Length: 496
Image 1 (cartoon, rainbow, N blue to C red):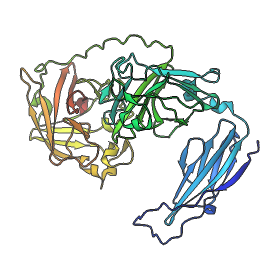
Image 2: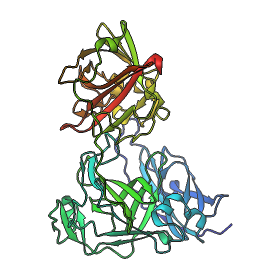
Image 3: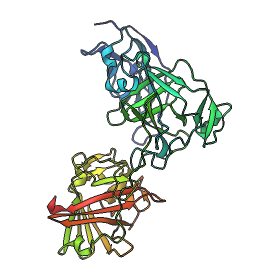
Image 4: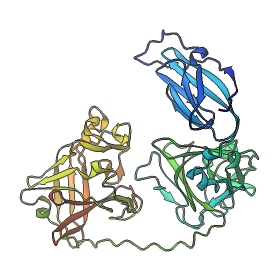
């Protein structure tokens, strides 16, 4: 085993604890000595270290010195490259907090730890000694855009998508971004100017109107840039550019979520630091890669109003009829047109991944009642007040703002189609919905509770009842100005 040398440095004790009802402020704060920790190399590699705090506190936060921040009494840090890393543990009790640091020395680079699919896609791998250079995919629509933060309809530029070459002359399209595996090097070539958010102009002397929105500014990047990646367990990898660099469009931050990475595509999401509620997106391709002329998208066929022959009797059957999501691709999704799932999930079948959605029952009675039965589980999302977006027990909603979206009975009305319009189904009541609780006409909930006695109307855009197959497709436009449609395909519960 290689020897790891280190020296001990004490970080000045500081108090950060605000008034919290269940803790007494009379407790003495911890000291730097209380935050001491030890470490040892793992059996897997001398470059993978296991850290353990000497004490035990209700909150213990680690900065592992490699770009990772984690919490817990025992944690693990990976250090592929030789060098010195400052590891800091901060502990908290009722009276305050204290921190303690050690500088660890990794004696040798471990090439095995660098040979990761994510690193190789980003940099070209160990054999690409000059790294891999990325540029904006300016010839493709959606290469730059903005959407809400947190995301609503999905992680894509929902509110605005730049058209091909729309930002030419702004200072972004001629920039180059080279990622090098060795020493995690990053080279940013700007050709003299960059494209920045208008709110960041004060930080860039000489910034001026770009002519294509926002600002163009002179900028010479530092020569000592580097990159790092942190891979949270339940979220996108986080790519950070250190020492003053950035990628594409500067909105105040230097950390990017890697929404997608392939051999010839890097799709990044980053939060606007000056405008709460905005997230920007950029799509890059390798320099020299020809993504081809973007073909005109084939328009998705939309049923002509009045063509859908769906009646109240079809909906309620002989007194009462129960419907559920069809367990198939295309049965649940969002896109730019009714019936489309182009934006999410893009043709994927979610019936296993989100089984808790596909077992929900919606029973319509001839008395005008609609009963929702979640079958004991839901796909909970943070806007409901739960802690995570995943299938979970319905009981998790109890006592939360989203409790009104739980199983219950509401009212419904049915409007037949005519020569100019399709049939519609309207559900009414506090927390009334079909399939997706957050969607309503012209918007989506970002936080609970739902509006009292709200009515939500769904348009019936297709109905099939032949050869033993019966299914109905409904849609709802959630964009204030139109153009973002959630669509669902329902089948009778007894004919899955």
